[in-house]
Length: 106
Image 1 (cartoon, one colour):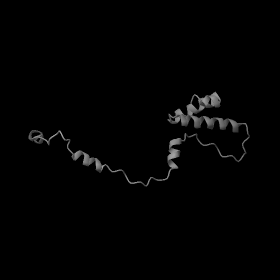
Image 2 (cartoon, one colour):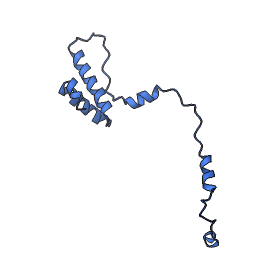
Image 3 (cartoon, rainbow, N blue to C red):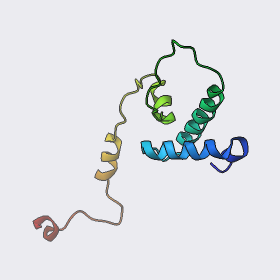
Image 4 (cartoon, helix red, strand yellow):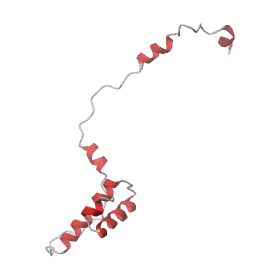
């Protein structure tokens, strides 16, 4: 977020932090996205809106991670198997004998 101040106005960055905090998003991606939204809103504020413009919707924070994951294709790989680890558990180390009769009684 510190580097974001180099490219954007301070007011836009602060607005982005405030919007991200209100939405409960604690990532730098969310702050950057909201700061860019604030900058775009300022750019469009100078342009008169057409009279047929729709009323503005409530601001929402978009998670970039959720957006990226939504664009991924479904994972069709089989689930991993841990069966080969069961074979390792059955092996005995050379210096160790099987359980004694006292250990078996427990």
